[in-house]
Length: 210
Image 1 (tube, helix red, strand yellow):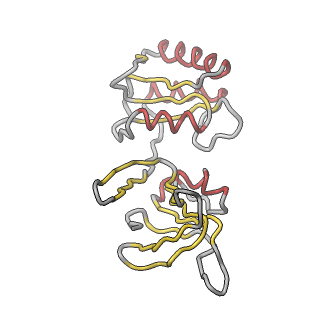
Image 2: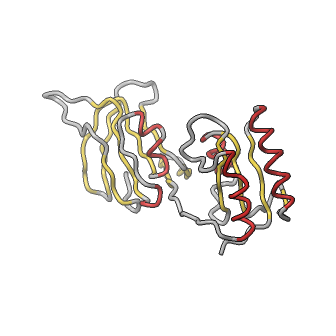
């Protein structure tokens, strides 16, 4: 049973999203939920997929929170609820009957001669040459060589992010709870001189690309 009391709304800056936000806020308060700006149990994004991503980032990828999205745009892979679902959602929320799915995030470490940087991503990491020239990478998975890649770049996506930029480059859609990483080439060179993977590669999430 999921117990939720304190809720924060993350709302897109457009008229439709703001109107729906007012309705949701009123309905939540009627059921006894507290609308807060910090220390929340549940974050609700109202807008499109971008609103969901901004919510998770603003929450510093806090795994102690629950997240859900209400779609007020056109296409929203991350936004599970439509306006018509709001009453049913709030009723189930008040009864603690919602189903929760764990999604994986990407943890990225970048090593330079001077420093080490750590970043998190919900969708993907894109590797390109700084001046957008042809990129050359030695790609290893757990210290085992996969390929010496030559092309425009490489994209490493989470399962959640498989429907985002990854899909635009012909990558596969992966169900959220599989917790995989997907390596998708961006315009790879393939000739007598260069042999690159032309399709995406899916590996378990605990594998590391170095």
